[in-house]
Amino acid sequence: MTLDLKEISKDYYFLVNRPDMLERAKELGYEHPILVNGELDEDDIRYLQGSGKAVLFYFYDADYDIEELPGLPASHWIEKVVKQISQADISRRFVAAQCSDIRAENDQDELAIKTAEDNIRYFPTVKETDKYMADKGLIWSTDYENLCGNCREYLEEGEKYCSRCGTKRGEGKFAPYRNEMYAVYGPVMVGFYSCKHCGHKWTKSRLGGTYARYCPECGSSEICKEKEDLDEAWKRTMRD
Ligand SMILES: [Zn+2]
Ligand SMILES: [Zn+2]
Image 1 (tube, rainbow, N blue to C red):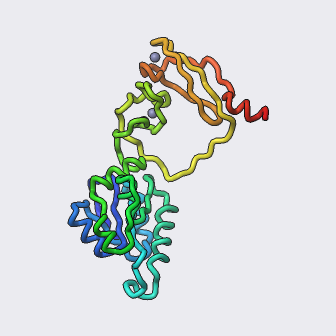
Image 2 (image 1 turned 180 degrees about the horizontal axis):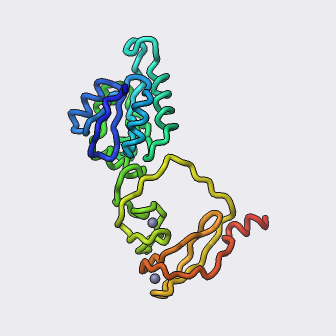
Image 3 (image 1 turned 60 degrees about the horizontal axis):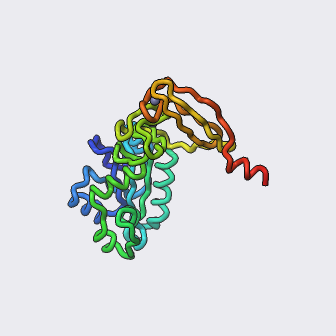
């Protein structure tokens, strides 16, 4: 094991690549931040896989010169570590964040981080990092305005329940999901639905077909797909 891994209560491991970043992370109250200073071994990967946690590797490599790590440019092994973790079958997603990513996303402006000192000065707080991870859908959160708290389905304005899994808007916790890519083929289909319980009628559109199972108004599963049709926009594209 090359990493100082242990059980944590947070939903993500916070990895950094420099001793000064580790110190700063401790000062700011991060739970058990971990220093990565070379490639990971199989035990590290297995531990991360088994933890069910997300992994955030927050690194800075701009002026990390060869002297600090003899014989191996930082960018070389950072790239390797990123590859190692992202290719491992980790149940929650992995994020490799460059120095300014987290602050820039939260502050909505570009920060000019050019030196290691800047990096420490702009080091994200725990709260900012939590928000960053939540916004990326990587940790449990029900702070989302427009996503189902259980299955991440996009919720239309006014929908009170998720039409995919029936979870009430604003409730539920995001379920862990695998580091996979999904591909959906096919034209945009529009499904027309109605609810036998409350009479609500709605449409859903999705590439390749729709799959509503619950009423977005009352949450009942007694729904009926009236018909499914090609999206008008797609029809127009095909005619052109
Ligand atoms: Zn859902
Ligand atoms: Zn209904």
